[in-house]
Amino acid sequence: MKVSIAAYGAGNVRSVELALRRLGAETELVHEPEPLLAADLAVLPGVGSAATAMAGLRERGLDAALRERAAAGRPTLGICLGLQLALDETEEDGGVAGLGLVPGRAVRLREGRVPRIGWAEVEPGREAYWFAHSYTAETPAATATSEGLAAVVESGSFLGVQFHPEKSGAAGARFLERCLSRA
Amino acid sequence: MPLPRLIPCLDVAGGRVVKGVRFRQLRDVGDPVELGAAYSDAGADELVFLDISATLDRRGSAVKVAGAVAEHVSIPFTVGGGIRAVSDAAAVLEAGADKVSVNSAALARPQLIEELAGVLGSQAVVVAIDTEAGRVHSHSATRDADRDTVAWARECEARGAGELLVTSIDRDGTRNGYDLELLARLRDTVSLPVIASGGAGSAEHVAAALEVSQAALLASILHENPARLVALRDELRDLGVPLRDAA
Image (cartoon, rainbow over all chains, first blue to last red):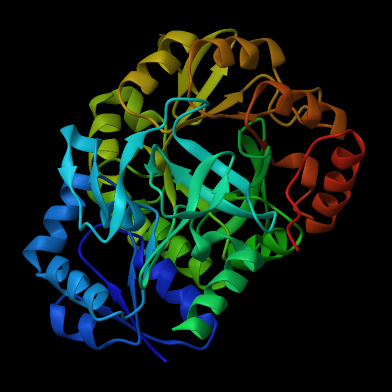
């Protein structure tokens, strides 16, 4: 199993890499389109600002590679901002166009304490995962929620999670293991 | 709201865990990675590593701790101490930390908070506030920073902080309970998550802090002993605190 992790200057790629390696996956950090296209599973991590992250993807041609993977039905896992970038657009940074892999848009959280930071249960399943976000996906593609917010989205071969499985202890490892076995 | 969080705090100096009572009288109690992993296994929701050493290369030592912890721990952790610029913080996050904590550097130059939030995102920026009698202190609580605590909290939020870690200096290490009055005022003043710190002596103290704050920092109450965390979590559950099931 070869997993390519998109390294585009916006994310805690080392944690993702370490978590996948603990599960026995062969990982590589990729900065170019070709190895991202070739991987059994591509991972799009991401923290920080949407505009900077999107620019980082474009600069490296990774945006086109991710669209090509989606068109070919090859699996991609988007984490946190990586999920939000896969949407049509996000209202962050005054409005940024996304990859358009998943219908919908990311909007600023309007309730509760923001950023929403902490462990929260995901339904169905009732497992708690680690969340750290100020924006949330409004999408018809949500297949699991946390306190009413999209926690997992699925569209074609793209799977996105708002939480950080790489930081979610045993529950996160179980989730990543399922991703690896599906890919 | 996400579940209430318990966050063991490990003070690190020269790559080793130490614990100061009232910020002084340090004694060495071990390896940060080993202790951090043991706390994670014991059900910690997060970890905080504060580098309190006064060495020249604090950034280097913070990055080293972050890198080593990330290898062995799969829950979120924060690193503080010696972060003075975005490049310091970015290096710590690249090594695998989730958040950085800034204190004196933000007081000296509040613009730092905006710079960190702009590049790393607010969720990665914790501002630590050491406070006594409603006033902010800096430099490991040795200097009066000439600021009102609530006003500074508000300013941190406006500048893009993601969380506030509020330590009541006069309670730190005393085990007489958290400063609930201050925490309640902060709850009503800012809409950021607040991590309560200083004064935990019993499960009841922690439960009371979690009523008004989103997380509790745990230091001396744990005696640097992960088994104490297991027991504390059980006691808190008995008190009706909805902690996560970490299994």
